[in-house]
Image (cartoon, protein in one colour):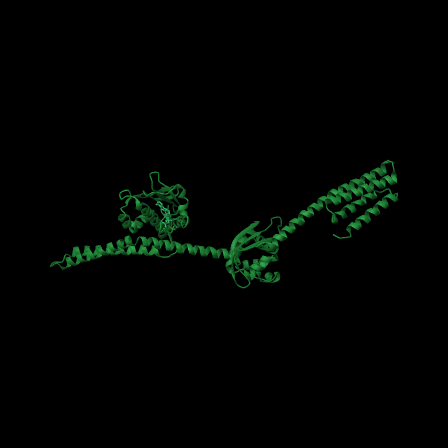
Length: 503
Ligand code: ADP
């Protein structure tokens, strides 16, 4: 906008007025006022433009009055009306144009603000060369990106070279630690490592399919070599078929990933600590479990020796004693193996698990505890249950935790009133396991809190058991619920989905 525009408009209006008033041509000179109105749009707002239009109309009428007085002959009146109509129409159009320009300017300003100030790296890119290359491949009869890539392994790199960077915001420079746009443009292909190529292939497929949006996770390198975990989206406006304006936004999620990994590691450590703590509580029971078969080995060994030392050794009995010794030794080593698995930090190993077997196995570790606390056990294991896919050790840990909790909860009940029921049954999409006790139960208000980490009502409690149990069950695609039993006591029940292939 020139600052001379108002002066130019006034001079132009004055010139038109004088010309219109002082000359006697048979043309609608006042039509030229539209130029004044159009000029005014440049230096004034809506009201100003309306005022200028009103002045132009006033001047037109004044000229008409001065030149023609009350002479209402049709020619001059028609010319005057044409001029007035032209001024009115132009004013209307000019105002609409100004409004549109204002809106566009505002959205452009908003876009620029977002572009500059956002914490996300935004790249304006031109994919038209890439698009043309893909179209050429299509005309050559190639049917998909996979086909192109399998025929030409270097295609992804070639495609990266065809993605032209037009502009990038400041966050881009700080994310990739580059000083300016030119260096970033030159280095961009080298910041995309080989491991990222499979993700780029999916992006190429999205372009091939004509999709308008693509989102994926990936990795890129900063210019100083630091590896970045990124989340990136690519917006390809469908109204620009040539893909000459593509917006790529890149979010650096490295710190978040590291925090997640740290959290995961901490959770694993905590699960391990809690598992070892549970084992500590069960030491007496476990020692007995190992001791019993060892005592069996000794007894059977002695018996075997006695049969051998007879004047006429009974080799049949000796064989039977040795077989019992082997069986006992096997049992002891089984228990130790299970214990070692339970206290190890091994990563989860999914296998097909028969839930009834798992319950039986787990009971060997807690049986002694059940007996020493005078708990009556009712076991009800349903036949024909489908197997589930899961990590035996983790699921065993859940069952041990629930049983130990139940035994502890019943500690204050009189002997004879301590009942533990373990039931398995088919649930709608898999198997359910319920562990119910006849202890004091819990207040309904505590139901949700039970599973919260560090919630405990025990003086020595850690409050981690149930929270870990729930995460293990949920990681297996199942759910774990607690309910207060109507007759008193608590019931914990988990459902696990059956393995589809094993079913
Ligand atoms: P901790 O055993 O260390 O307290 P848990 O997460 O295993 O941690 O249990 C949290 C709390 O849930 C327990 O302190 C107890 O108040 C309650 N709870 C767990 N199992 C039972 C149960 N069978 N009956 C009643 N309350 C229970």
